Image (tube, rainbow over all chains, first blue to last red; front, side, top):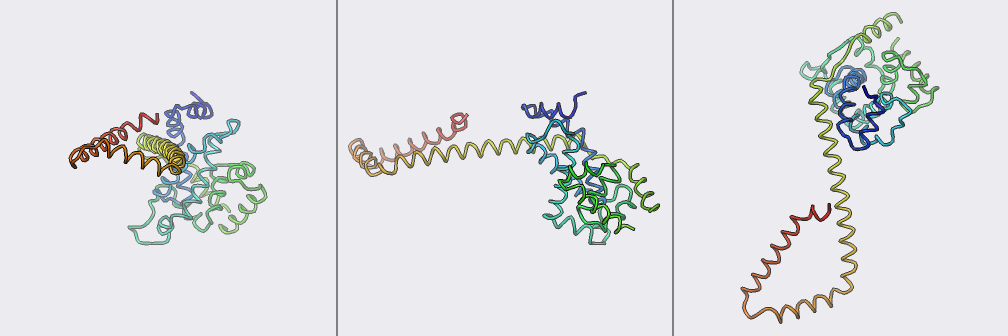
Length: 163
Length: 108
């Protein structure tokens, strides 16, 4: 089986179907990230996933093959999540309105979704990566483009809120 | 803290899967194709505009002379009566339409 980095190389040389293989391979992962970041909003999670794959293709040339594709994709997903949250107020309204017809589609562990709701966008992303996906502090710093110290303080702040 | 750990441990066991992964993958590839085609179109448009501006820049200083030569030439060539002029106009329009139709081939 070809590695992600080999597929990226082939996609860059014009074999667009190779990018399709990458999409298939990481679709569940990105959707899961989206579900966790958005506290179970399926529509929002799907949009994050779609935007992340499109943005990843747009910037594929800038991908450093010495690094892990999945980690690079995670960084893009975090940015897409933050951008979409800011731009699209319709996603936020889903969290505010309590009417059953507007309730987000919670398909997973609702305890976790309720847990992270008090957190700000970047805190949700960092907290999820640290504790659910077991990323190291330096890895998160690289993914989200922050200093390790800032990541640590954001995690501490998130834990304070959740206690 | 134990409650927090318990919730996180439970969440780790949950796996999420993208619905209709094949359709989702095809949809992404279609959007990527669309994006590529749009980029190509933009490049062609920019090239066309650039060439057009160049040609206009070349023609405008000589416009008076060109128009004079054309009209004087036409007045000599066109016999009396309006029908031949109409036929000529339609002929020119048809030729331009054909040229526009072939535009893709010209750019490629």
